[in-house]
Length: 282
Length: 184
Image 1 (cartoon, rainbow over the protein chains, first blue to last red):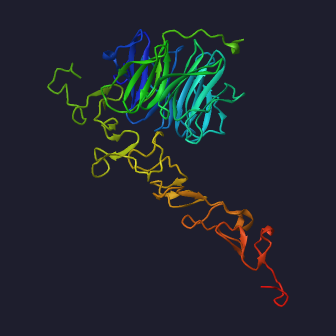
Image 2 (image 1 turned 45 degrees about the horizontal axis):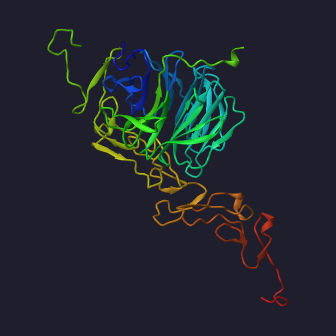
């Protein structure tokens, strides 16, 4: 065991990045067990931006803009495994498809949306046009789709496509500011985003394309993750993780880590993978 | 290692005041785990993202961490705006470039540091027909494109007086009007 890699007990955790470390907080129902918050990984010379989780192999994936690199490590401890280290400039969003075993990321300097297998092999640029500041990206394994947001000051938008890069289309391009965070509630097919420009957290029903405000007047959200009826976002101004109840549309919790600095990506580590039919397995 | 039974088993963390530390067993390396506000790194020797400096003075005098200095030509919603040690700006916007985003980038001209309203850096937009080798660059200060013979205007879009045929792409030709039969 390495003291800079702390194995995580079973159960769902929130995992988030703060400067050169990745922290985790156990969830007890919807309540954060803040007294049990621990660092999962120390990467002191790196600036970690986005984190994602593979529920099958219980691995945490992350991007850092210092390497720049995309790496992974097991939730139960172990070495850091670099996956992509070449032809990266500013990788800021990352998403895992646990069914098709794919890794997707955005790069805001190459202005690309890219995909590879989970080991970083068979890399492919899906899109390199009409992208200015692409940041968050999420997968929808059941439908074979990806969604991403671009905080282009002159035209912020949320887009989607199939995972093979076909059928790209704009999902939202009105009343957006700086959509920094994006997450999918796969059970209800709700896509939610956190916007540091409009200072709102909103959700959209992907079937009916109906938008709904969840909370207004948030300070400076950076990343967002859905967990059951709750959403959790990291906030640059509050330097905190904030919990929001989607149904009551109220803030339920705030977690301030001991170290005061900006928080970046956030994800959850569900104990069981969502059951999804894999068309590619036939 | 507290189990060796000597007075030196436990040593103070080699970290600035208040920071805790841990040892990586495979390398015996000590890593600070709770650096003072604004700093990070194995020894708290680095500045947080969006800041630069040399808080421990590892490469010269101590420089505490300051926000990136990029002439107002960075976007504060971006990450990695400057090099955390040197302060070199890495994500210039408003069509600027340079260590401090202090110059207009290739193909643009103006004053990257201007506080006046309007665009600091404007596109050269050189007229391809009137410009040498159809260049897209221009003087970064005046915006003057490099014009073909007898071609005028900042963007090389017109012939000098008494000349015609900009369309040739080789510069303008003299009109050769007979002064006796011409009105001016």
